[in-house]
Length: 185
Image (spheres, one colour):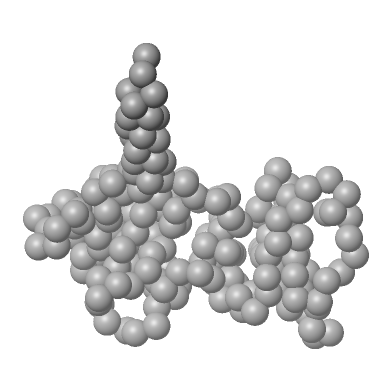
């Protein structure tokens, strides 16, 4: 095989692989409180159905907001959007916990956001939602092995992603200014 053909094939495969990587959806595992704090909105909503979207490359869902946990403006959300890519979500009629970001006045929700059927959340998870906002001053940092044994860090809670207890807890600041995991009731 000639060098020119080899270079051409290498170029083709690198472009093809690069395209595959950019089309994939990669979400870093995060504690639900991190997802809550980094979102512009967090709501409990009833999905009524898919509607035609006036925005290219976005799927639109008509919703009815049942409860608002976080929202900067008090504008009533009636439609949410999701990308028509591998990061996009499919919603069916029913109640969901949804988080997302606001772009150009539209709420955008993707696979990296909180998208949970409401009836699949535990009572502890539902109770935690009202406490997450207080903990947004704290940072949740991943840890592994011995790094999880570090004593108290002022504005951080350490999280091992296989720690079920932490996943059922909220990272909140105490009166001493130190953030700690606390069980939600």
